[in-house]
Image (tube, rainbow over all chains, first blue to last red; front, side, top):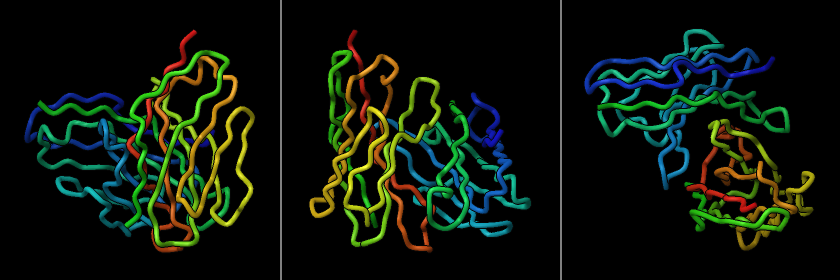
Length: 115
Length: 117
């Protein structure tokens, strides 16, 4: 089954404790990205990657890091989480280019709380 | 930069009736795509409908249809014969048609739809 898998689905952590949210896709997609969802703001892109070893900042990258060492994996790293990073996070992947086969596939979401 | 605005934070409708969710966007591009996503309490992001800007015909998917007004930069979603399972948060989203940034989605703020039995 084609899917994007995020882990964990729920996470409560303390300020300053490094954490990683994993994202893996099994569709051989080149493009992967991370979004955060906040009430009244919708989803906003944090980072994206167009292929292995190619990553770039989205609209709200401060406080986050990513890596793309393998095509299927795109982890989101919070080196020193702060309470303003409490949010719902989504990983998404898609093929590059145009057309209906380039639709985005989303993971199940990770609810992160930083206290 | 492109922006998407959903001015209705919440909407409600009686079961079996029709409801329209509003979305406006701002872009200087001529080639782009517009989407409506549904997010039920499970948090899953579900693609409801898609519209290519170069197509004049409004997209339809069963009970879901859009009113795409390109000149007005408006993209509303109509849900006919509303069902309890339609209750969810709905997001309007924009995607550029150009190769640079073509996969990035720009989302509106969301509209929470309640279905009254």
